[in-house]
Amino acid sequence: MSGSLRLLCVLFLKIYDTLPLLRRLPLPFQKIFKNYDALKKHTRDIIAEHKQTRVLGEPRDVIDCYLDEMEKVWCSS
Image (tube, rainbow, N blue to C red; front, side, top):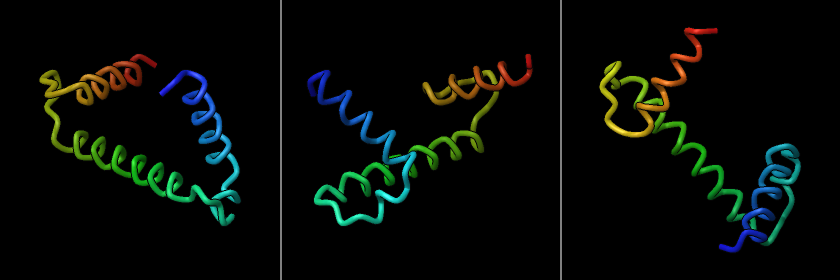
């Protein structure tokens, strides 16, 4: 995907998140919204699963590393 197209998609998705009314309009690219919502749900589910099953200091993947770093930030605040 070219840089310009990617920037346009990101901009549109930010507007979409900011204005929930757009979700109700009969737009020809409504499938983009459904896919975006499914991706967000899937990401949340994976993170929730990692939070429940992780062992501190023993990261399995990048998500565990991210959660470890987030915990360090929260503890130091």
